[in-house]
Image 1 (tube, rainbow, N blue to C red):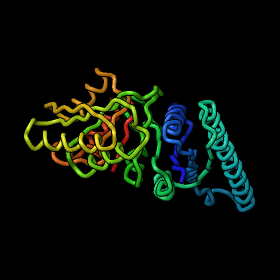
Image 2 (cartoon, one colour):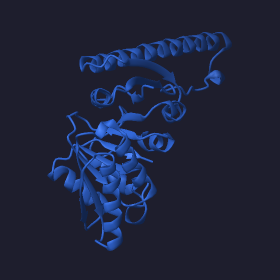
Image 3 (spheres, rainbow, N blue to C red):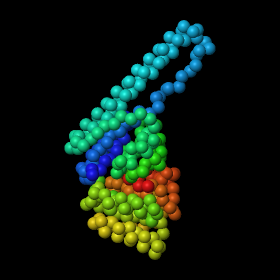
Image 4 (cartoon, helix red, strand yellow):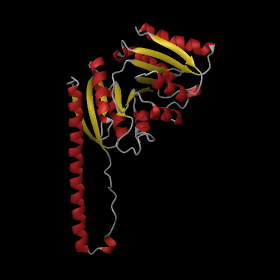
Length: 284
């Protein structure tokens, strides 16, 4: 049975990166791609009741005009959504991937994720949406909600795509970290890539043993990974390592324990995703 990845696109500058990452993942795994654009609640939908200051005839005419404007706006937003999907599909097909199906959905994006991702192996979103104010300060407002709603790994695309060769995996021995390593071991996506397993914290016999067990799990799947334990705070250490050593992807559990209990969703991870130049794969 062919796997499917769901890529959410909007009008932001991150949509091209989402599409290019989706094409890269599809090329390595053979997964089909479902492109989804969600039409949320209409902007400026709130209406002011002017009935007290408008005579009956004028009020009726005004209400009819407002209803007509709402209808026109809804049609324009639908056309815009279809245009976004057409552009996204063109980017993916230009990368040589033809198994692409576009979907235009109405409603809340997090609810859409929860409804659709059970049939997928991965969800892709941009780090920031088109409503983000200042890219260096704000994450996409729906990022946390999507991660919480998704039953599948969530791939958070960076602003620009680059082929992924080196992968940094955050390991704390917790359940979500175990599921992240298990996902790596089972997925064709990571075959042939260079992996480094990293624990941030004190070097103890328990930490060393746990890290060795994770490496053994990957080795059993034919994936070799370097291991290391570094002192410090997780967000600072991982972010610095990612930037200084040029890792192309960071993989981590969506919920941690011990020193990285708030890895996601919380201030530590929000800060790290904000500063991390590479895409991030979150596994619950």
